[in-house]
Length: 586
Image 1: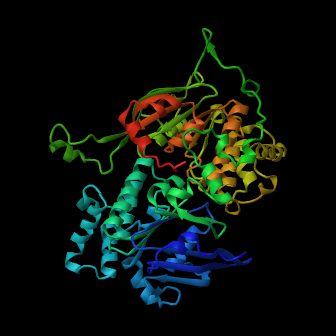
Image 2 (image 1 turned 120 degrees about the vertical axis):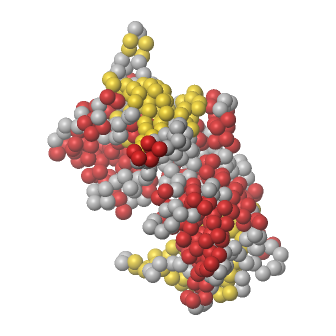
Image 3 (image 1 turned 180 degrees about the vertical axis):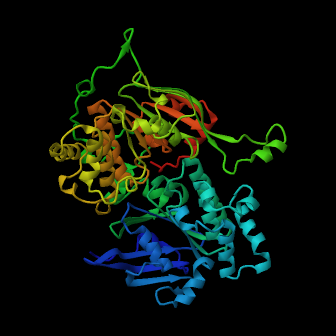
């Protein structure tokens, strides 16, 4: 492979010393099967005060490039060729002592998973103090006040109270703000943000990114934003660098690269990005989108729907559904006796507060809202994994909400409601092969002999587009998209009437997401299933769902046909969700 030449944009840049200059960078990893080259001949420059976006799919080398810049590659990794110069300093040859001093003080990083980046058994305020003391940014007597000030700068409510909080006591968005506070505590010159908003809902994502941009601009910092979200790169970056399989394939101004991408891979990423005005088939590569779909009619796949007085009854009816949890650290009986009346806050927390909705046969309904709004709790109650506090859950005319969750797992109705979980890796047993994972519901509830299981697994694998030679592989031997197909095959194994999809594509690259979404639509059309699609990505919901339910703080604020909600939302909260979605300029 020929070495990457400096881009025209780099050659035309004024002849000033860049803050970061990476030349001909090649990174290799030693494995049991030989040497793997993860990054090949990468060139990039970053000016002072500039924001550079690095986009590409998983495995393209985005994070490895940033780890090489910070020199935090694991033991098996090494810089095989090239140079990394930061503010005139040769990073590759610098002593480790100098690098420890540099990291945190002059260059800092926001890691992808905020909960994994924080020490779970240490208060967040003390973790910020550690960074400040490590780099001698403040006297020990004043370090606590400085840490609280840093928490206040990242817009954390009640910073003195949160100073004493542990990571598990904070929401995902709040943990992300703490990680930003850690990264910016010493006012570094360079900030590297590695997928800083993955898993966050759109409003929290916007708040986190707006905060990061505001603080970096105030301090004149340079930023590298690593993401697979092209809309995010378009909204927040000055330039964008596209990586594929360890190579840089294109670099240009963000305003130009999205309007007129030159490389085929960039065009593929653009095409696969969900956006208004397109269909699910439009997300696929051009040659695949033109292939005709061969699907059976729903009537051929499912028995006739139940009717009352000639009117088809809904498959699922939820009425005044309620779920309450006792508040953490609830008051003791002695405290209650002397507490002011009325109480400052109730002892019970309402995660779901009296919601009602229906799902028809063959219908796909989206359930959207911010993290903590009650989406997942609602889906878990409908799935009969947790018990309701009050309300009605009617499935095909039967009150399944009255059946305890523990008992429901062994009943015949269990096979009629299945679920595709959010993380395709965590939802598969690491010691089960793909075939064994798909076979699990068949062995538990399928009522078929073990001799028939393998042929049924192969039939399901073919149905979801999973190559048969992957059936004997374990989860760690498969890609994210392949694991997602295993999860979907497992969910449809018993030919259910209703599938609950809990953020099934949140952890996938846009091109893999496009394939999985089209697969879900094809399966719904051919098998006549109904979907409850839980998501915070309204662009995905727009493409897959017939109707949308919008939740906020446990209540439904709006529901109706998808196009109506997306084009003319009535609730201010829905309008805020739609406004917060970043879109590439296409």
